[in-house]
Image 1: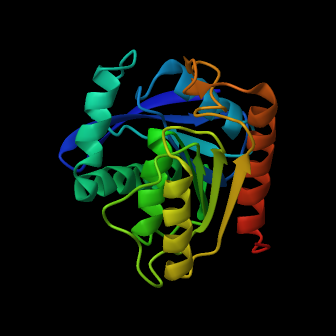
Image 2: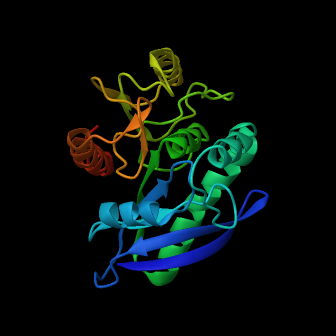
Image 3: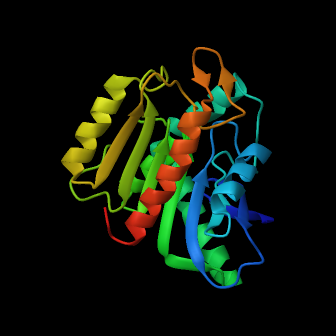
Length: 243
């Protein structure tokens, strides 16, 4: 898999993202934007994007902090994440810029099918792709995995163009059921085409092997396997207008 580091302007920062694709495959492929968790554009995030891309997609790992910054976890990750979350307008500029960069860089290489686009976000990244959907972005599907669900700028009627899929742990302490209920009401009010699935008993970050905070964020192999299979099915169905 080819991994190319791409610099791009993202709001008020210089993003350093990663374009990931199988260079041996010829012709255009659908585009997959990957918004990583609160650690930033880490090697595990890039490897996960490569696994999801395979022979099927051209992927791009979005840089939400600028300069490709990464960290080991709290307290730094909490500080960086909250800085982005506190300014939803700026955060939206950064995730929209990442999508636009994916489209333009794939076009330059003749490998992208810009009519078929999806975004997947993990944890903090899940919140970022939901914000992308709320902007009315021209994208087929947005998938939020154990994500940040709350927003200060909820979608209004007709705002969301993408099909939305939210996968969550029923016992996730980071975004509990009350937040899921608020998101459901928002998605209904906006008229979005959406689905939500709760994994019973699962906590936060169940689809990320490198994340382990006992009692808060725990990887679960079965839920992860199902998640990646279902998100690919959802994306393909969105491309084929079967949702």
